Length: 486
Ligand code: NAD
Image (cartoon, rainbow, N blue to C red; front, side):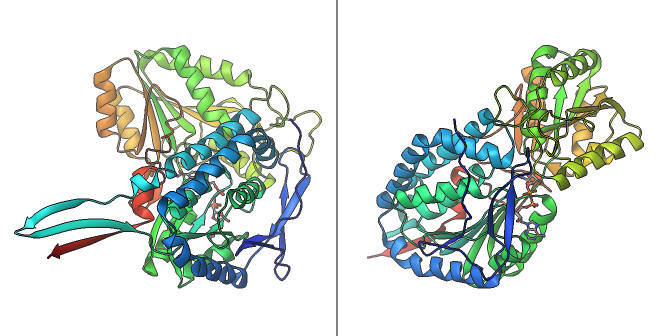
């Protein structure tokens, strides 16, 4: 596999790559080497307005394009992504930091969303019922609404935009995407391939930038709805701002995922699942395990298994052979994660493995944090309550499933939680009472596939419709109900 340097990237508006020189530019860096990979525009209201106007102009003709034709563009894009899968994975590893097996998997998850969204001719069908009254029939039709804004985070920069825009455009809408400013280059390549697949100018536009661009998109009178994924803090602001403007909005936020281990679980299997969940992608996943709650005597063997597994992880540049865990995205984020570890120590959690001092030979400027394991973590401590988004495990003990569920109930987040047990009854009880959206039973990362909804509850998601699945169709269409008498 080779890595190709990226050229400076522009905004993609109305079928053209615009340098957008009037605004400043943002540098994208390789988190393992701190080398600059490219730059993107730091767009403001002018660039956003231009993109929204392009999307608005493209809407009437795109809406009239037959649904199978719209879906066929996604079929062709799927084939192109299959063809370029390896290169995309390498490019993504380079700008994000995670290893190539992880980025390959991410691209695959993105492709699966294209496959699912390609079923739009069936997904968008409405219902009909004759004789709702004597001689009166009723039918529903799902119609596209207009221009949607899609705003995405850095941790899955290829997959998360594909949770939204393929569904939006297959349903007949047009889109302005504002990807994360930290690693937008590989998705830009996906957009180039979408153009090659036949997506007409103006149907999908990309505006790079930060907060100003996001606010301009939300405030724009011609944007009818907003799909957002990012931290809870920003998700809440986006939800409130878009809601106040009367727009439909889905805003997915952060997480603090618990993994509950019952005494009848197999400690070896649990430790392996926990290590994969907590330390995969250096903990930068909204489905990453964060707090491991051991019930009874299983606690000790699980703790030892986690420590063994974590000690065996090879840390390094994601592009290098045999690397298990890459760097975190930026120096600022590394310092934030280390700050949580400092605070955990001060709060009295016992540090069993400390990743703060990790160095990787040959990469002195990488943003490294090694696997870190605490025990005696409580829900009052920031390390046990707040999202760290780094390779940090907090272990806690509970006397019973009941006590573990109480711990879970106090979490401000509701994204994912897992139980490890051989008891169907306990698993059923957990599913029934956890109050969490994505539930794993003997699964470390409970990631719903494209045809199922993805998203949380509590502070992990604002809005009622989730990403992917049928919710995506509901979000990007309005149901019109026709009642007729002839
Ligand atoms: P972030 O909130 O910093 O940024 C997300 C997006 O919002 C980016 O496009 C960014 O440019 C923009 N943004 C940042 N600050 C803003 C502000 N003040 N006003 C308006 N827009 C702003 O998130 P991130 O660090 O890129 O991503 C990591 C976060 O995303 C984690 O909290 C993670 O849990 C969450 N996440 C959640 C899910 C989910 O399914 N719930 C999935 C992936 C990531």
